[in-house]
Length: 341
Length: 268
Ligand code: SF4
Image (spheres, each protein chain N blue to C red):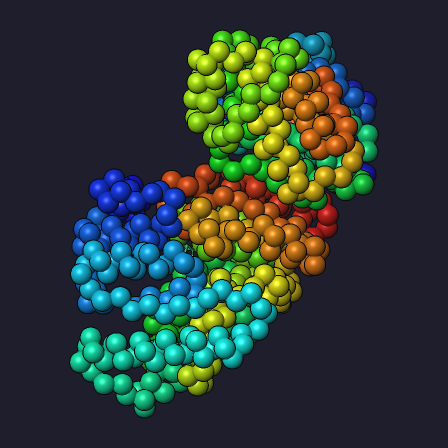
């Protein structure tokens, strides 16, 4: 049984949340209630406070409010509105920046610690260095043939997601780049299959089905050489305002035109012949604009973009057979229209 | 260039979720035999439809005697005896391109899924959209509804013709729609009007799918549901274009598979 299932069932049954709620939220809320992993592994301590930034979606707000209420702990909220403009303007930076400054005050009160500007600068520097290195590592999929199995980025991105400010992360990405560089120098690759086609994987990974989503691609010689999700965590900034701007510029916060542009850039750099778009039942925010995004990218880059249904964390919302058919259809289109090697 | 022997036969089998279809073509791609069995993957259906088709070709004693074969459909990977397996997307596209001249949009409503295929001028598949994981708007949906009406699914088209108005079925979920139908029956709404509503709900869903893929004429409909004339005519009115069909609509996938096996029509 997938380890998340008992938590999802607990959220829906015991806690009464709708199964339409994002599975990340359901799992987190159930964990806060149970306080332990169902399979006895990797228990995490429960928090003393929660800090919520809604730059990825507004589901976060109620989710974190409910966590705060359930655990009886303070909630610090940073509201980052969706940007309907292409660029992030000064008003937005001032609005979000002021909230960060207020959050610092709240944190000082909650923790009894005082703000240390030097330490902040140090973490910022490290964090940006880490982001830069992560982007560099991820860019190795742009080589043709790629020295990297693109799905591997789904594993390495965890470091960039949760530990960007740590020296060990900087070291880890340097090592990764060294590996990739030596692959290129020696004409090697950790993609142990032919690279007949190169595609973009759009959306969050189907975490419970990473193997099931990779295997049909591997069997058909389709490497994933472009994605936005993994590299999105490669944020770089030098100043406080730049950090705020980076928070306002994450994929789910920027407008459709900018989202399309970003995909076109990574798609062109990754020399893609097609794309697979994850219509993620959990993530209404990302999936809502995905069909139009895919339509525009497909038209502008002249490559087929095919959608499949799944979920980033609810194992009940994915069908291997349906996925396989869509992948085969994509491959047959790429082959019949002469896309790919 | 494909070299073939005049006496060679090529077999395509489409193992769907609710039916199995087989088509045998000769070296020129002409259909010489076909078979259909109303059960799908994991049942006796695939064998039965092949046997039915082979019985029509005296010089083909067994499936081993065909020059090449291709399996498609949901259960294609279970038919390991075939020379090749291809997705139902390419097979339907190829079958439809041969059945309907100049077709650019193929609407296929099968037992368990609905799909819209976009073909280029050469009949090659260039894009497709499939329904999400829900039986609403598929053959299964109509099976469930026919069960509620207590009629055969083949009679739905006739019943629709007797409708005096459309009893709207608002739900897009099979289970909810079923209870909506039951409550309309209980309220004394005439069955033909409810059938018309059921058809409209399938049309609405199919139209949404077609709009997502883009509708370029000529438009054709394949799959078992294409045999339902009333529904197809409603779809024509909704799309605003003629929607062609054929008595062989259900065999489009198997026909395409046979053509793939034979290397006909050239791009696979
Ligand atoms: S997966 Fe989507 S809905 Fe869930 S928290 Fe992330 S952005 Fe929000």
